[in-house]
Image (cartoon, rainbow, N blue to C red; front, side, top):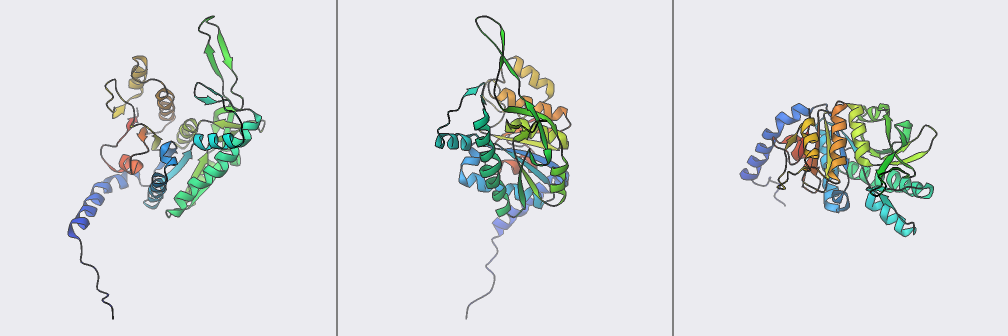
Amino acid sequence: MTDSSPAPLDIAAATERAHVLAQALPFLRRYAGATVVVKYGGHAMGEEHLAEQFGRDIALLKQVGINPVVVHGGGPQINAMLKRLAIQSTFIDGLRVTDAAMVEVVEMVLAGTVNKYVANLITRAGALAVGICGKDGGMIRARKLRRTKVDPDSRIEQVLDLGFVGEPEAVDVRVIQALTSGGLVPVIAPVGVGADGQTYNINADHVAAAVAGALHATRLLMLTDVSGVLDKDKRLIAELSLSDVEARIADGTITGGMIPKVENCVEAVKQGVKGAVILDGRVPHACLLELFTEAGPGTIIRR
């Protein structure tokens, strides 16, 4: 005969859990019914334990009454497939030049393998996630991305041809809203479609900002591989206004690859997002810490 009596209560552990719940309750009320767009990528996607934790965190957001919408990248996965197929990649200003053969590979990897992997992470954690791409239902109407560069010798402006690299022209939110209102978590691959039916490879940050703006999301969370926007002494800047961003770019505080991330956040805020946050996706439970604690781990940009 076995003893079926319950294990003795760990008072210290129970007290800690109660304290965490009490601290989070005001934030749970604040974000109840809110839409939160999360851009997912970088090392947080590549490391298995962080990926599984991300899936659990997104599932938790859905379970407590928040409507998360995930937009993912997949650069390393695309690189791996191109290497297997012996297709050479070329980059201009950090953007992959995408010809007709390469755009097929990009779509296959982003809208196929990676998209279903991310959706499965969330579904296994207890929330029903559906993987889609910007072509589904004409959700993301894209146009060819135009970039120019000034030749340092002649000072003549040159037009760069990036092939089938696009940018969002319009976002039709009906598919997204149908999924979220049905209790599902949309997981979006950053592939769009032109007016002529052409497929375009789009930067995931750009898609996340456009989707967040079209949804008038309460928050846009940009998960990166850095802690946020740093000042010239490498200290985290907790908050920036739109005018602060302009000043920090002008004085050289914000440089390099952080500039387009910040600019995407600014554009999202201008379109109606209440706050856009750049934070380190490698930090355990980064999304939960940002939403459910007083001082989140990243840099928030808002009006």
